[in-house]
Amino acid sequence: MLHEYPIVVVGAGPVGLGLAISLGLRGIGCAIIEPRTTLSKIPKGQNLTQRTLEHFAKWRIEKELRAARLMPKGYAIGELTAYGDLMSKYWHAPAGREIVRSFYAQDNERLPQYQMEKVLQKKLSSLPTVHPFFGWRAERIEQNEHAVQVSIRREDSSERKTLACDYLVGCDGAHSSIRAQIGIERSKQDYEQTMLLAVFRSSELEAKLKRFPQRSTYRVLRPELKGFWQFFGRISVPDHWFFHAPVPPDAKLESFDSLGLIQQAAGFPCACEFEHLSFWNMRVAVAEEYQRGRVFIAGDAAHSHPPYGGFGLNNGLEDIINLGWKLAARLQGWGTDALLASYSLERRPVFWETADDFITSRIRRDAAFLERFNPEKDLSEFEAAWQARESDIGSRVQQYEPNYEGSPVIFGPPQGVTSAHGTHSLKARPGHHLAPAPLSLGGNTFEALGSGFSLLAFDAPDAAIADFRGAASRLGVPLTVIADSRNGGREAYESTLILVRPDQYVAWVGDNRGVEAERILSRAIGAA
Image (tube, rainbow, N blue to C red; front, top):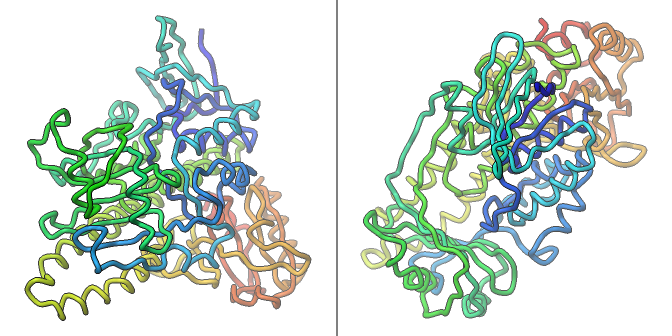
């Protein structure tokens, strides 16, 4: 028997769950397939950015997510870096993402991925158009120009089904079978470095770290590690931790001295009660494209990476925020195939640069620093260079501002390029995330944005607003108009009219003169 759905999502990690929720909230029917029936207790994907919390707020589960944290409310999320070990006198604890807080509508958050998945699964269960197949595995897929079929098998029996859909999205991880079946290659950078992951409890570690200001992650840099980190992360207070560190290539897990390595990085003897030990290989891989016909990939299926900087999960969720509204638009009849194609054109360059310039380059910079400066060779030179590093970390946070200036469905600047690099600004700029500004009747612009396109109109003439309403009606594009005066903080946008996409990125800005609303909206949905 053939079961038909508009969308089939393969993989119910946070990225797949997020996509199904995004579609379900838009009334789009979908099936989600996942072989797991229980959640992993490995504490990955913990650092959630302000941008990611904006998604949870739009899905109306931000409060539930924050209530699921394991850390005390208000506990510092930032990182601390020490030279040699955690008892070193050389350390810095710079400002982190809080320095860009004013450009987003939410605070960031920290909690293990399994806690986040509980919140997402609960929301998923409330959406009648989403049909979960937990305990089922996706096997063979076939597609033609009209549809996709996927065979699924129940994990605990021989029961099988065939699902047909208009579009299928593989959110099935770094070893994606969906990506493999549609023949998308990946560009790889293998560091040939084996890493230890340890999950443990240690009250002695917590006691010693009271010498520092509150932080959630602690990095140790050692010259012999060539830029790779020894990395402690809090799971919960007072004593629950995870630890990543490079190990020799010939290390065997069953005989490796994990406790000794933790004590080396800590700089003192400490007892550890281990809950999990494993090795993993550090690599970066980015898919050559994110779409093949009617099949898309997102999250780790599209880009895998070491757990440095919290880029992986946050980028995976940004993938599905970008793709979700475009799939809904196509199925509702107002989006185009060109709009769907813009998903890969927008998201792939962002993660390519993220991997190269914000993950790999950080390892290279640390390696170069450790090779160049050594307190045993020239103490004063090392101390000056170490102090200068602290401000460098803050500048990298400010530089990470993904944007779609080069997208064909964005009215970006001439020769605009889609990039992970940018500057945080309150000014409304095509291709960039819209920063919040207060509204005169209360709340802010970000909260007022609709689920479709939104037009911010500040002291705009009624005729210009009417032109956009009429064009949206003719094209079938859902449009929310937010009209207000231009003062009171909204002057920071530096525009009278601002067209914002459903993913809260600016598509176009202008004033009141010569507005061609239908041409603007047509291009924004790929119909130009």
